[in-house]
Length: 515
Image (cartoon, rainbow, N blue to C red; front, side):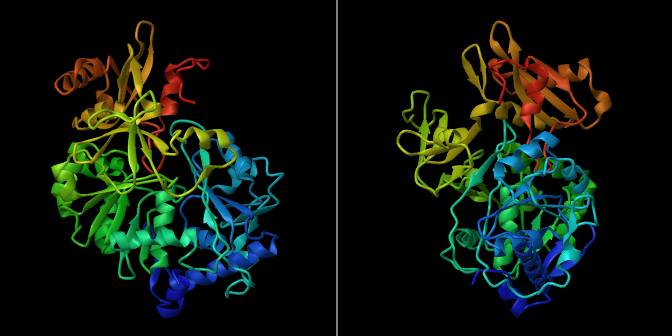
């Protein structure tokens, strides 16, 4: 049985969760008992297998028990990014059709202001809040043993909010017993073998649990008995401290986190003990070549990158050794891959096109058959919306998202390459490159930079950054101007929300805006 319950029986006092900020430990027995009580509560409040639960919460000590309760109760559950605007949260809540919502003490007041007329069950993991029932109080006298009709549920995560309206990704479910390896949700735990994660491992999760990869990796880690260290929010220095303190063996990052680690003072980096790390997994976006090279120099050849999506239609993997021979690649695809040009036909190695995968698991965009159909090629291949190319050896390189491509004078320009150049400037803390309106060219390249020292912003700094680009980029790729911002709109997982930047430059009725 692939389920944390077997470890609650075998090694009940082994830590299942350690909270990064406080060090609070939740053992496997505690996790199992709390999840069981919450599953009973969900049944008592009328939820049946297949019903939908929404979770609007930051990372808390109760988070994993809530997710496991939903899984045990056979529910479809959606973690909602609590940093979204009120209207965006409402849209996801309405679209997923939630019969119940769980909020935290911090988020309950905001959620209470939403239209919850169609959400009869409202629970909070924090103290009593108007319109919400405290889950701990309500479940206190319920059994800590399994519910009678338990069966595997499934997450339905909303993705794509970086470029437009988030879309729910619905995956197959099956009415099987808990931990049955034949269940689609349980089969995902096979990735733990690939990464060498087992009951002796300590897995650090520095990202929010409303994103697919952090949530799935944490739950899969529990299925094999590992300890999960949860960071409430990412802080580079705190991340290094937790790795050393808890002897972390595995962790998963996004490239922005690597950039922030590398920006730490040299003395902080040199004092950090990362000797316990066996594997540093990273994904979610292409990693700038120099950033990854420096991370390998610092941590050794333990970086392992994968390219995939919540849709689970295909993926590639690359080791540090392979990457050093093919810098910038995201690896050889482990499934059928096709690079497709504007006319819908495949292009030869070296040419950029839309990346499509053949095969993969079934999925659909919830309540959006048009988007589901738009992701498919006439040949049945499907895409995540990324642009890329293959080299002669079959290694895949990503250039950017289709939606981020800048078309200037009829020429496609991919912002990722420009961002990779600018982020290596020692005075740049973060950067985004977008297309802005130009009467002659349609779009022109504009950089928006966040500086290490915000007071340095100005004409001289702009000139320095433009000169930096001139030394590294072809003329047509160079930004025409650099704007400065105190903080770029990234979500807590490090993903850049470019649509918010573009909204500053494009008129509301423009066809060129990302929607």
